[in-house]
Length: 139
Image 1 (tube, rainbow, N blue to C red):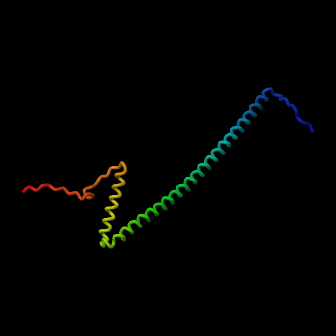
Image 2 (cartoon, rainbow, N blue to C red):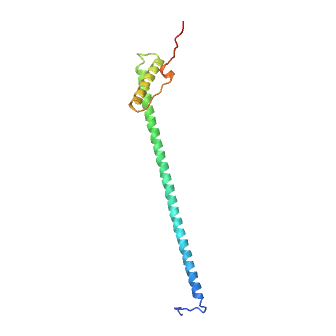
């Protein structure tokens, strides 16, 4: 069996054409390889974005659960305060409606103290302050 170690084209333009074909094939293979690499990068980027979104969703769910638990604890604590207040005054103030009004006055006082401690403005409606306007009657 013989090995080909050299060849020579009969037509002088054939080597140039073969060289162009080889160059174009090489370029095409390089473009395909580059496109494949870019595609792989895009796939990894998309997978990373999906994983990041999944993790963000999980974090939001945990934060939501934690906020709900905190709200339940705060609500229970507030309910216990109201209950203790209403029952604690039952002997001195037998009327439940009077005790509820007292609680509301105290809550308004707390709200005013909170507002006074910050830089907020507080606006009252005439109903909030039991405001009435009288005009002098002419006799």
